[in-house]
Structure formats: structure tokens, C-alpha cells
Image (cartoon, rainbow, N blue to C red; front, top):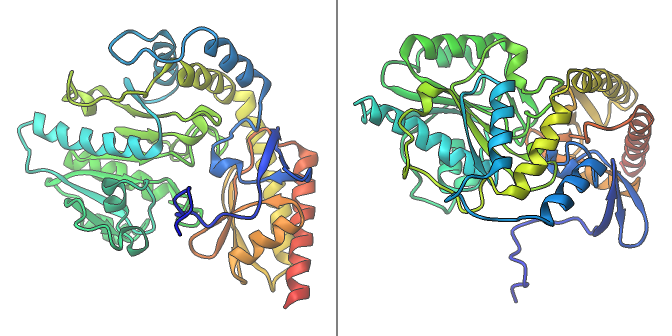
Length: 392
């Protein structure tokens, strides 16, 4: 008999009832150190006082009015995002998947508006993850995501991730857009080299193709810059944002230049809940914190501590771990044993991590993690590795 909750998740036998900072409390009272942060969502940790206060204050005033009317909090958050990024305009969504849907629509509408509707192909990359809608799985293309859901949305072409030779021969005057995660998250914490992203920008400029960055997981301070593409010194035409921007409240956005978005006029897109007062009030508070240069410098410093500790674990447990990769507080440990075994052993040591492709364990702690919590995380992961060695 099918359960009341559709069984599409392989859930761990854990039920958390309270969170504070980087810690989650299980129903039985145990406290777990959270290095998953809701898969990169809880950027400021659990129950951050400033977010709780902002949400409570707004909830007592107004929850929802729809986009038929002006929404001051939405306007303020859009202005802040425009101020801090390459973008000229912002559309708010509820999730990264919805952001993907608009990014695809915006790119194709751009060429329709330019009198080139046949210019509709979007180049994407193997190992990508852009969400679970039909458009999103069509953009990703992997059999794991697409099997049984055909026919898929046409118009996507898939290339090996960060393959310079492949991209050189692929982008031309018929390409509508290129979409890429500067760091693949679900794909196994695989960063695209700066030189590749820079070349991608140059090829798009040369052909007029739009460049779309999916920063749903790697954005909002996760790498020690506000957005990951800043490390390469280039900017996209369209960018997808979600996860961390709401700090735990469902919120996403599409940021775009005026040129990329010029064909998106009244009636071409909409959202019932996107940009609601609750979400935008929280998002504005997150932005005020995460965009602070001193806060980002702290993320970079703490990322160095965490990476140093993880490299030590690889050296100490070569039977279990192979290497560390990633950037900032978006790190992955490539495992020599099944990554799910590492996650499970972590549960036994009351530490939470997230599996990813390529046999990687993801570490996406809240950006507010302390030095002491980093040391504790490394110690608990070390004990988990000892457990696995004892079981071998």
C-alpha cells in the first residue's frame, strides 16, 4: 500500500524537531552537527534570530497579496540584488526549478523578439542538475533524471562538463544560450575552471549567445564571494538563484541584464506566490548579511580551516577518502567506499552530510559555522571513518 507521503525520497531514519545555528535536534533529544544545511538552503543556520524577527514582524502584517499589486519588500530586494550584481532586473520565484523554467523561456523569448525564433537551441552540460520539472530534466539530460518521463522538451544539446575542445566547436550563431553551474552540486562538487568560464563568456560574446549561470547551490556567499562566477571575473546574461537566498524560506529569483530580458513584457510570465511579502522580507535580511564584505571574508577564512581539516582526513584515512574538491564552504570528499556508507556512519557520530554523484559526500555547512564547530565536524568525520575501517 502506498504511504500517505509519496515515496519519492530515500529518507534517513531521523526526525528533527528543532534547530539552532549549525545544530539540529532529533525527536529523541540527540543533537546533530549539520553540514548539509538543508542542501545548501540554511545559509545563516537554523532559527537565525534576525530572520526569525523579520519573518515574525512581516507575518503579523501581511502574507500575500499577489503580483497584481506593488509589493514594497519585493521592490527593495530586487533593488538590492541589482545593486550587488551584474543584473538590471529580477523576477522572483519560489524555487530553483521555477527559476530554470523562466531562464529557458527568457532566452528563447529573447531571440523571438529579435526576429530569430529558430535560434532556440540551448547548450547544457553532462552531470548538471537544474531541477525536477520537464524542462529542468531535459536540460540536464541524464538517464537517472529522465528515464520514464519522455517525451522530453526538445532543443537542448549536451556537452562534457568544462570540456574546452567540445565547447569551441559547439557555440555558433545558431545557439540561443548556454547554461552551466559554475560549480556542479548534485553532479559531485565539480568546479568549472576559471579559464573555461572565461572562454565560455568570450564565445557567447562573439556569437551573441546568452550565457546562463545556475547559481542555485553555489551562490549567495557559498564560495566566499556573493556569487561563484565572480571568481572568474566575468558575468552572465541571466542567472538562476534560490536555496540560500531565502535562508530556509522558499524563495528563488532570475537575475538578468536589460538586453537579455527586454522581450519579457507584461503577460509573458507570472507566479502566484513568487515575490510574496514574507519571502522577500526574509530574503532582504539574508542579502543584508551575506553581501557584507566582512561576512564573505569570514566565509573564505573558515573555508580554509575546513578544507585543511578535510585534507588531513584524506591523509589519515586513505582507505576511505580519495580527495577534497570544491570552493569556499561548498566542498566535496571523493570517497573510496560507497558515499552512502560515509553518510550513514556520520549519522552514528551525529553529523549530517549529503551524498552526490561521482561517489562524493557534500559538505555545505551554514555560512555562520564557527571555528570550534569546524574542528568538531572534522573530529566527527574522523570517527565516522574509523567506524568504516573497523567494519571493513
